[in-house]
Image (cartoon, rainbow, N blue to C red; front, side, top):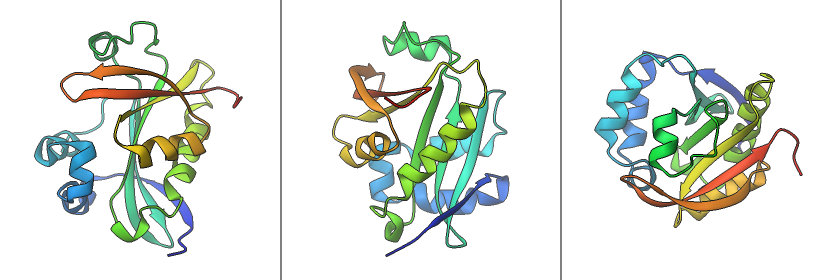
Length: 169
């Protein structure tokens, strides 16, 4: 399928039924975990420093991207004590099976990077992927992220921290 990313649209409460379908997809569940816990969190208004957008391609919603400042507690729990809370952490999900593997993830990630790096206080961007989630790691690598290190994402297990500096190297 040859889809083209057009927009990132702010996620709103009306998107929850769509998000519910995506979260219950087995492939999404493997990466994102408990669908009901994710939906509970997504049903609440985003906190300050947290943003959500539906990824739209060819006029159809195909996924979700989140970006936020991680808390000191989250970073410390993962052993990422050297990462400042001014960094931006990006999470992405392509929920439509026909849109998976079409190269839309890296394009959406690059759009979020452009938005996040407008703020001069953001030193760099981070992303985390489970060790076995090669498609996610590949998407972030195509968007200019490099593999930094492995760490324990409690309670989810071993993950890879990927980092994108302000200027791609």
